Length: 247
Image (tube, rainbow, N blue to C red; front, side, top):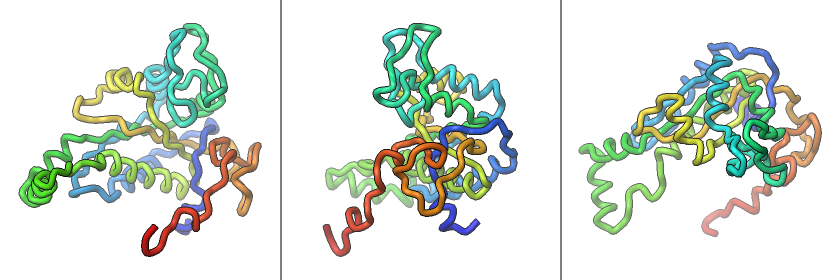
């Protein structure tokens, strides 16, 4: 597939068919992910692949609050949201939490890739001789060399390459976050080492809904839309966000 076609067709897919994903496709996504740019070539990322039904079920069990009165997470785009998107309901009594359309759709993904990153790896890398001078200079000027948490930035770049590779493989994918209140439960369930932080999760599968038609507005509804925020908000025009030569 041509690169521009990949960029144009990429969307967040939130519902999948029952068709399995070829292991070679997942491997290609991961091989491309580790080619993402990263500060100091630290490569402080790690990926936990959940591609068996019982492992996927363990993920959702660990990230889905069910107790009465518990917050439902962050709504759309956040795992374990018992109430789903904002305004779609609240957490139900224990054992009877009503799944939102978002959560019900996301649970159909046959593959989940948990994207992790290590802050410690970046601190160690920038203490090495070829990077220490720049870090010391920033500290001497009263600045933190890590005002931007590049461990998460780089993990995000790796995630985008996975999303784009999924499109190139004819698959659908969605990047979403884990609610802060469920992160520790997920870490414990997957045995994640303490040094690694959870950046997010990439869900992968065969899209249940057709992709939007070429030239179709992102404000459409129904099967031709992704069902996410782009169906309710227009894309900002380039002239609103690009400033040449200054603001």
